[in-house]
Length: 403
Image (cartoon, rainbow, N blue to C red; front, side, top):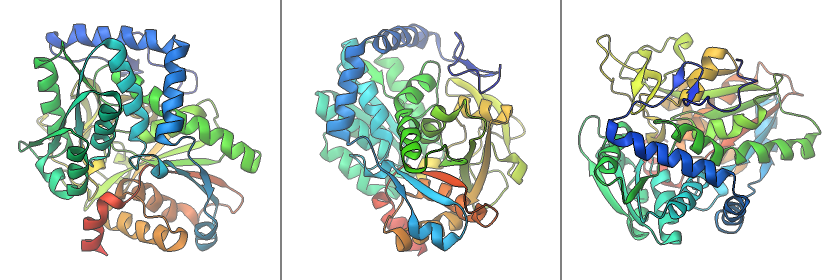
């Protein structure tokens, strides 16, 4: 079945050959319970009405689709629109999914949330939702990321969350997920693992995508009002891939709309120097299909199958796997994936700040850098939507060292 036709995973949680459920026996029943609870919530109009109300009154949706007039003129290429997820409460798209899963937790009668975070934005969103809904919250974060994102660590603790540093492995997102899953296995009766991206075992990739697809649904209506037609291209950064799939999903049936996911090219193309899983055509090495943290997808791994270390200036993109739906869209040729370097992302952030008065998160700056790279080859009447998944407040320390 083509990517245009298949809009949901199959009954086994598969997107083509990717996805599925690869977990210890102790998590099979909880995942089945979660699948049933989510199916019931989707069918309940009152659940969606409550979520819509929170997204509007608490999170700040709908977010604007802003015409980037000065950036468009500067690049001399396509007409550029920016989807402003950075204007949401907590500063990024992560609040969309955190609110959805938070409501699901209360519906299931659980009182504690476990989460992982890399850049800290998902952790902040989860801690925020826990405070709003009266839930206990524990967030796992690699100590390397805690150092890079000290502001977000303080924000989580101010909101009442327990932040647990993870000092194993590469001390980044992969290791935080491992610890969060261990906690969940131990406390599965009382706790819900609020996974932050389109990763993990089924039904998580579908749940997170469904709570993020509001991005693309809004953008589709907004571009039709602004320009009277669909965009030619969508561009978004891809770590796990939730902001990108959130933008892409509403446009999947539209073959004329090209989709570009931008990964972390880091500081080189050799294994250990980047976090590019789907950009092999650009010379990045190490990605092979495999199982990581509950799902079958493309994973950066050594020749003997060990999970490789990764590098990115952006903590949110510093992960060896990618969401299974992205892996499938890449295999189908429905979406294109590429990578940009640390230095290109930092320079792109400076460009946007000085031309549009917007300081993007380093994650989003990767997508912007790719747009800048392509602009001269694009026609002036082409329409592009860039997903600005988060704001750059959290990255000031890193920017100060680079700029």
